[in-house]
Length: 347
Image 1 (cartoon, rainbow, N blue to C red):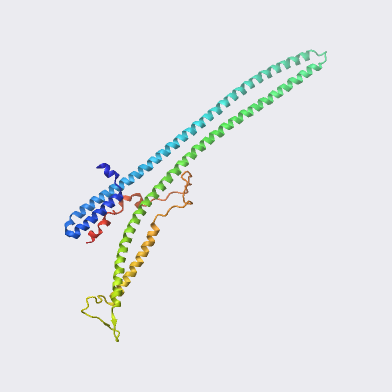
Image 2: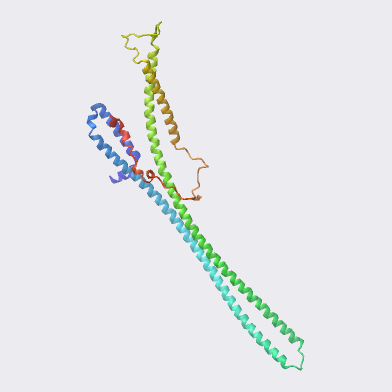
């Protein structure tokens, strides 16, 4: 029994109410309305409860499907973010490893250059001392060349040390830029989540509004059907009146001679005919208005220009307006069961 209640929808309840209403019409035609006077409120109450359960099941199923799609989407995004994060972490680790290796190499090179510089300075001092001791002898050309070469070597090594320091500083700046990019990506991810939440709220409101418009469309269709039946009756009466009017014969004093014994004599006066024609024209105007409203509320097929790519994310501008109470609490709207029993309630 629970499975049957869970699978029933609002349209099934309306079909059931329509069938019960037809059966009640048959019972009223045969036995009179007194037979179902006490039974009618109980049946209507039971059908309204069943309608409430069905509408609640529909809303719950819709919400469950939305939540399942949201869960799948969030899981997919989570997996993508984890992969992207792990990729960034690996790249950052590789950059840090390369930076450490280059730093170590540069440190070793600086140490070697300093040692070599000290050694060259000590050798240069020794040579200068030896040259100063030899005051009597002139400095040979070969020693001058050696001293000049040592000085060039020292200058070149000093330039290499400065160049390596600049490269080390550049690597540090690159690491800081990568960290800033990572922070921007995290902030961009938060903004995307917020936009997605707003879009889901808008889609839910649109679905609820579509359901309400479908219910209104069904009510307008039923009213249009009733007006069409009334129009058919009015047209039939109009034809009968026109036929009866053609049978009237005016005399010389502009008076109508009517045979009182004729069973097919006219049954309406001119004023009554005018009133009936006025009512017919009024009914035609109402039918025209209802047809215009029906055309307005009919769902039209979306054009290619109106189709939005689900992958493309539309920007959210400004705060979202608060939904009215009728959309937030659709269960408070009146039931549609009683319109199937209006003929009994009116009587």
